[in-house]
Every structure is written in structure tokens, then in C-alpha cells.
Length: 145
Image (spheres, helix red, strand yellow):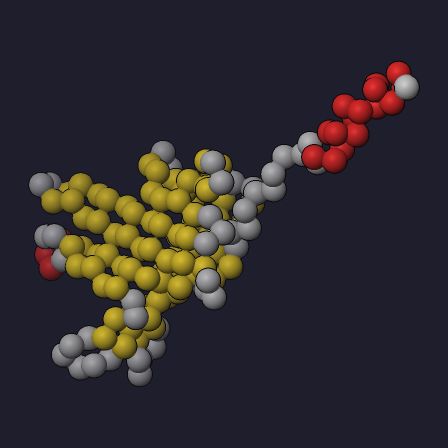
């Protein structure tokens, strides 16, 4: 009976797993839901909710964000804006990651620029130029979610 009591804590630990929760899988494609860019002459911002239909020509704009995990603490990001009937526009970023409570925080150097988890991607970069703040942001959700 005493042997059984000594084994009970071990059995409980084994049943509960006792391990560290796995990190969320963040690599993959996210559908862009919002895109914010500096306004004309760097004044203010312009925000587009995707899919966006241009009222001047009825062209439909869509966006996607592709994430590749380069290393434990780095990700490569390619964002693409598709314009109906035109060649898509794209650009890329390479950011560092820090774990933060079920999400990862993204950094460009020492500046925190967003968060990412299994379902959402939020990037927000702001640069001060003179008296203007230039803002560039992307919000996206995991494709198919």
C-alpha cells in the first residue's frame, strides 16, 4: 500500500502531461482585413478594409500576408495586395519574435511593431518625420478561419 502512495504523485504528473505547452503555429497564409498607409504628402492616414472596392473604377483589392518562420526568433513576412486586372503589389519584412502569453510580439530592432498568433496578425509601424507621424499597419486573420 505504501508503494502505491509513493507512486501516486508520479502517476498524476504523467497523466497531466507535465510538459510545456507547445508554441502556436504561426507560419502560413493570413487574409488581410485592413491596410493603413500614410496619406498624401505624408499627412494623416488612409485605411482600406479588405476586400476593398475602389469607387472610382470598381476594381476590387484583396490582400494576403505570408509568414515563414526563419528561425526560433525570426519570421519573414511577404504581404501582397492584389488588384483586379493588374499585377499584384508586394513587399517583405524580416522581424524578430518574442514570446508573450500565447502570442508572439514582433520587433523591428528594439521597436515593438505588432503581434501574431495562430489566428491573427497585427502589424503597426509608426515613424516620426518632422511634425508628422507616418503610420503603416496591416491586420489579417488566418486564411480559412
